Image 1: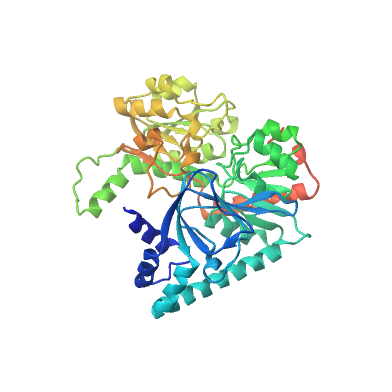
Image 2: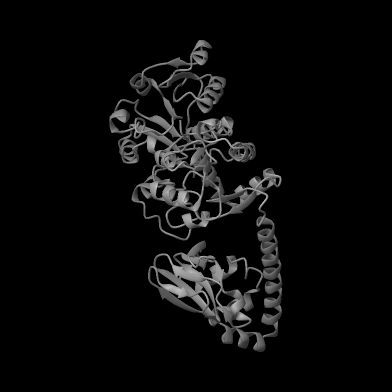
Length: 488
């Protein structure tokens, strides 16, 4: 794809210009020029003269604005296809914010004078842009209204990081005007922590990086609660939070059924070659060669971790007629007494299982629980499923096991380096993670991007429990007083 084709695609997918017809787009494209910026280079300065609109082509751009104390605060990050300085096309004005390249960035620029020539010379383009501007102003008016409602001293302010449209929809719906929410698309890390200024609570997800440096800055900003909207908390420096007096809560169980059912979906899709069969039929190939599966009935499944999700999985597997072996550091005596599952040593589970499914938390002890040594103990052709934490599997050892045939199938909803890629769209980019790229080449590997939790019921439970956790904090409870506190 050459640069002009890429520009056309960016404009077509940009909210601001999506409604322009093809002719108007082509006219506009001819007048835009591509400028390269080095890492950290200032694109425009707050208070400077504005007469250029910017469209991000490649890389990312930080948007910075000075607060009352004169310190630059990061408002947001612009990704490819996002626009800044649209109003500069209509009237010269001072810049309301500073734009700075995060790494190397390519920016398409459109000058005000060039734009006005387009308006004067092309009646159809003029009309098309009026429609676009009308839509833009309505959206900006809505944002202003939201900001005004957000400036509510009576409600607790909560900064929600790493958000997606489905996150906002559910959290807004379940909020019921209890809290003043501010949604940020960027993940919380050392580059974006300044966005937490003015908030007592930050709400984070699995790939936000709440390390010691971030915790220290959160404390300086006055944050008192980190509310995780997930069960795992390995991305949070819990000791640093305790040292700075910041409470940390989580959502211990949002929907064990969602994760257990997704686990079985991976098993069945791999076993019955569903994805391969679907691809064939789309190409009018109705051959059954290479699609032979096996009966789940009477197979031995090893379940590592028998918490709420593990127990749900056991119930489903028993419905298939599977024999279930289990390993847990703290065996569930009530579950064992039902006769549905037999607790065994980990090595025995490895040796006897046709399918192994992971449902354990990620700790120092469980890190790379499935390594080369463990894989060598398994049955030839074993199926491994992981819907828990990526770090439970040594991925390089997994690849070697797939290559030598020891592992016959792998279903992965998580990956140990997933934070770089999962939840984002890289369809127009190259995956630079060689291990992940290699995994995607196997026809007996099925990867989903950490979506086992993603059901309507689970999202509602996540929002409700998160709000309950924040409500306890708001009532004056701290640390161990909080029902779902992780600092014990």
